[in-house]
Each structure stands twice: as C-alpha cells, then as structure tokens.
Length: 270
Image 1 (cartoon, rainbow, N blue to C red):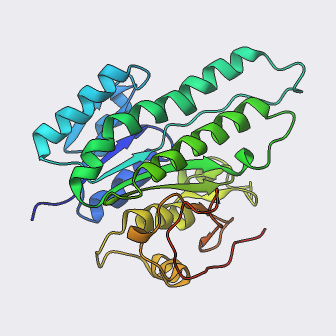
Image 2: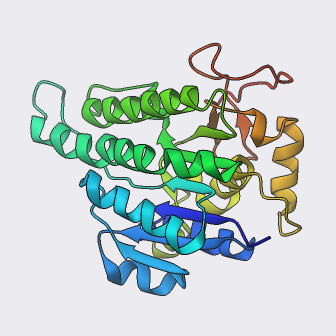
C-alpha cells in the first residue's frame, strides 16, 4: 500500500515546517500550500503549490489535483493563522474583523468543503484544525480574534457532524500562544511560560488525531495516547486542549453528543 497523503494548509508559517518534518519522518506523502512559494521551498514536500485559499475554486482545484496525482488524500491539517488585536472592543477597527474573518474562517470553509469528499473516499480521512483558548475565553481587547476562532471551531464541529456516518473525523487542537524552537532561539532569556510548545505538545496531538501506526512516535506521544485511551478513529468533533509544557490531555467535547461513546478521560485544567 502506498504511503498516506497529508495536505497541509498554511505550511509556510511558524508551525508548518515542524509539522511537515514530523509527518515526513512518519512516512507520509506531503502536499503543502501557502501564499508564498519561498516559504515552501525548504520543506521538501512531494507536492508544493501556491494556492489562494480565499478562492474556493482554486482550493477545489488544489484538492482535485492531489487526488489525481496521488490517488487519494488521507488527512488535511489546517494551520492557517494570524492575529490582530490589543485594543478595547469599542476602539478596535472593524477592519481587523474583516481580515481575521477571511484568514481564520473563510479558509477553513473552503478547505473543508474542497477536501470533504476526498477524506471520505480515503476510508480513514482526518481533518484537524489548530485553534486557541481565546475562542472559549474571549477578552475585550481580543474580541475579533476570539470570535473568528470560535466560528472556525463551530464550522469544524459541523464538519465532524457531517462525518457521523462516514469513515472520517474532524477534530480541533486548542492551544495557548504558540512557541517554536526558532522563537526560543531568538529570545533565549524569555521563559514563554504561558505558551504551548510546538514540538513537545502540539505535534503529538496532531499525530494522535491522524492516528499514525508508526514506530517513530516519541515517548511523549505514547504517554499522551495512553492517557487518551481511545483511538483517533473513534473521536469526531473533539476539542483537545494542549497544556503548557505538559503532555496533552483531552478537553470534554463541545457540543454534547457529537463524539461517539468512548472511555471517559479527564479535562486538563490550568
């Protein structure tokens, strides 16, 4: 059987290269996209395309081209991100909302619609969205960002519901602000105590939700998987909260009833 195929949207961002390297090491065929070709050049992917994810037709063309080239797409990781904020709710420019709506919501809509059929056809399709705690805990200086993230989560849970009778899942990994090795190297004096570590915490969560049966899992991955006590194939519509600097624990799903019956697991509390 040929290696599974993963499409990574937003692969050129701060998180994308780390995710691409990990999935390449696990034997996946990589298909990556972003707005800037230069940011993708060093990833060594099997398929590299610059796609405007705000253009639904272009997004569908991307999905179709991958299916035609590789015969299938088994996972879509949505890593497109961005932030605007910091001003009081009655002073923040609504232009921030317009930008974040397109960046954080519209791209999720277009990718999920374009890849839904290929993920179902895969027989083990996986969709994963990286979100933020701000979606459930908005502040008045972060209203537009929190609202956009919450909408993207709701759309992903609706996608999960559409998979209820299909061999596919859609899940959400919830983090604090993200810290990458490059950020630590640039600011070695900064502790990043409230940040989620990309390598130590977030990558194992994405590995879990794509359910890779591979010996390259790290000990940290295995700890997390034992704690979850349930395979990703039986989780649809779950929000996993990735804690700061600790092995991830699953949050209870929102809304109730989306996740099929599974052994209970405690929610992580900060």
